[in-house]
Image (cartoon, rainbow, N blue to C red; front, side, top):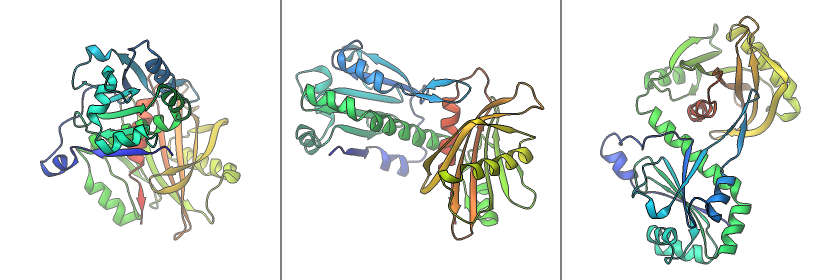
Length: 335
């Protein structure tokens, strides 16, 4: 059975010695591969394909990551990158294999050789704020199988870490006063980076908004009475609920029902229905973009929490903006 090992080599230092240093420069969308065989070799080529899923933002599709591969022989140590993937057979006779065996402890290396572990996540291993993922196996054949069958899991490991690190960086300068006030007043908590400004609170206390400009990003938390958990079968009702909300809150925004998708998801610890799609505003002929909304049911209150993410970035890459909003939205809790 595949398993993941998560280590946080510098966690105690980060907590006990004041603010952690800034992570390596660059975008969280950038992934650097170091693989036996070099940039044009079998492993780097296969990994680049695995790490190239595209996100559909309805106005355009974009790669989730920008992947580059470098030669192990010429690699600086440590690599000045936010995310590094080491790929090769666990064999000290090869350049990357030697790095892998030198990085893993004896027990983990033994599990790799037994075929129990293939993807290993190391947080803050070489640099604070850097993710190192080791993709390895005891044989070439087994490594090919891992790359063929575990690609989605590898993508999830990296993307989850990107949001975690981005969130930690954003919240180095936060607004706990605002989070505390919302918790006391409305019964939910959201950690608020100082880069985001509270825009307004809904009349009657049924919602709040955070905005960040250049380009515009909006994160809203709203709530409404709801008698049962949201479901895919009730997609039309959820669409109608958001349609009414954004028409009132976002200066007449509308949605294209043909350009929406619904799926089960999770938001932090909560099961959710996620709706994503294309928004537009006829009052402003050029206004339109991507939105993503999480519907979370509060059984105690018989209430639907609506956590809404919206970007307006024509001609700009959407992935970093959406990732940032998701990272903040995942701090949502209700009480």
